[in-house]
Length: 105
Image (cartoon, rainbow, N blue to C red; front, side, top):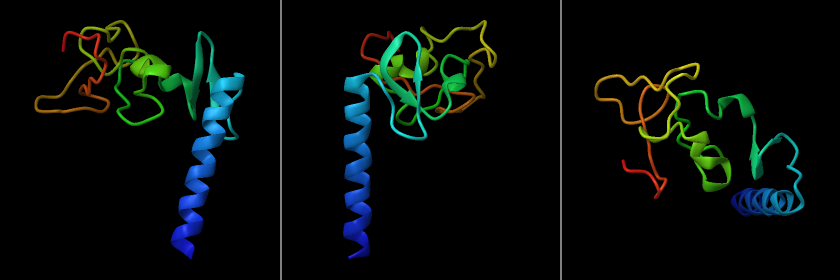
């Protein structure tokens, strides 16, 4: 029963997020982002900071794939973290996790 309640809560949260995106508002705990309708994130400053946040809602089409942070060719090198990567890093603050189909990488 506890598992069913948890699953229902997850479904309800997902439905609220979708409704919020459609209405231009975000569910509680998430903030809208100017210029990105449908993008609702806990911390808007993480978008476009030069460090890939590979998980949803950041690395999604509605949030412009973390405002380009997750692909080498779209990451802004003049941003706070400068798109620097550690050797062998796959993703995260010092690597890339590119899922944008428009990217070259």
